[in-house]
Length: 118
Image (cartoon, rainbow, N blue to C red):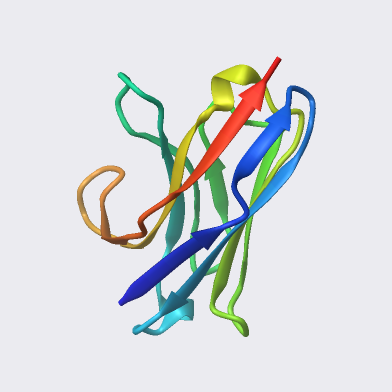
């Protein structure tokens, strides 16, 4: 299994970025997917999750600003991030195939850095 994120970068507060996660090595459409982030000195946070049927959940901190989506034909997961804030600065990674444990996934990508400046 391989998960490869892209789309990170530096942006000013109020700006937008769209992250992508290209998945391979398993049946993409069969698995829930998620985006995590981790800032220096902070715990990893589940930002958003999308289930196989398309239902989504978001952390309160990103509701109304971030949108998770998936393209099963392209085996790709997305995270559209709008109205970015400095506190969104973190390493963002995608995850595949949720487990029975809360916020648990079987596979994780290496991540992409998002830096939001004021």
